[in-house]
Amino acid sequence: MKTRAILAATAILAGSFNPMLATQAWAATVVLDPTPPAEGPSPDTLAAMQDQCDTLAFNHTEGDYTGEVDVGSIIATYVSGPTEVAPFHTIDDAIAGTLVGVGFVPGAITIEGDPFRIGGSVNMFGLQVADGGEFTSSTYDFTHDFETVYSYAFNCNMTETVFTGASGYYELAGDFGDSNEAIRGNCDAFTALGDNDPRPKWWGDPYHGGTALKPHCRFVGTVGDPEPQERPDEAGTPIQETQTNELLAHENAGEGYPVEGDILLGQVVICISPTTSTQTKKGVPGTWTPKNGYNGGSSVQGQPGCNTGYFNIAPWGAGSQTSKGTYISVPGV
Image (tube, rainbow, N blue to C red):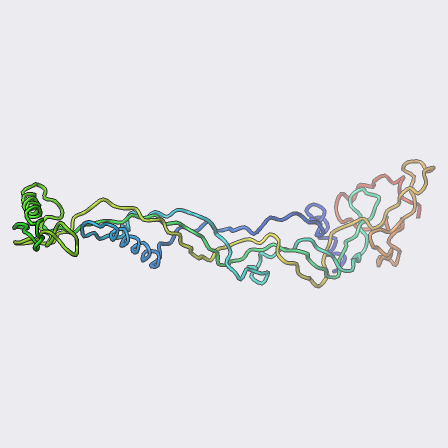
């Protein structure tokens, strides 16, 4: 870097320089996109819901029931996520322009260019430059697959198939010996219930009473037409579903990485003239002393950098060039 370029950058560095060696505590990975809305239920989840509705219908031991998922009743409730899906992201997934190094450890440090002055300070300054280095950590944005879990509640529309318009009567379905008269009375009672409004749901079934293997009464007449009739909805057990979405996220504590080339660390004091004796009065100058890795040399008129002759002609990097400072504290040579 040329001396002129260094001096031109000095004013900016003086007001805004952030030391590259600074470190801070970082939080965990943060998802930048909002939590994705529920996208389900999936076909598999709908099939599992229907299985539940079929089971609820089968559990009705009386009547011919069917159950069907009420799609309009489905309600999604957030459970957890988004959670990153393995294999997890690495620094190679950093979006271009978002990678920032953290915790810079510089390589060999030198002072670049000639010393310069700032305002009325009696010190002289220079720019520290590192020969490459390494960031111990990093931050960056990336995109990756994340899983979010939702729970889906639902109802089953229940219907029962009944026969309407049946006309006929119930009679004995067999010979029951001594019980014939009593069972015949039951069959007559079943027939009489056909006059009720509404009729019992079972009226018109081919057989009634007794057991499935040995029914007491059979129906004689016209059975009528089957008609599905709505019954109260029944709730299924909510089903959880995991969905995967590609989301934008930010890594706050990523892996470190090396850097090459000259790294400008900022301006530092490289020539001072401290009082060297406690017997010396305050304000009386000491001896010019190089600091912060400066080797004392200068390319201006071949004079060493840390001396009063060069101090008097040194360029200003910033501040007023008419301010002379407290010249009583400037060394004689």
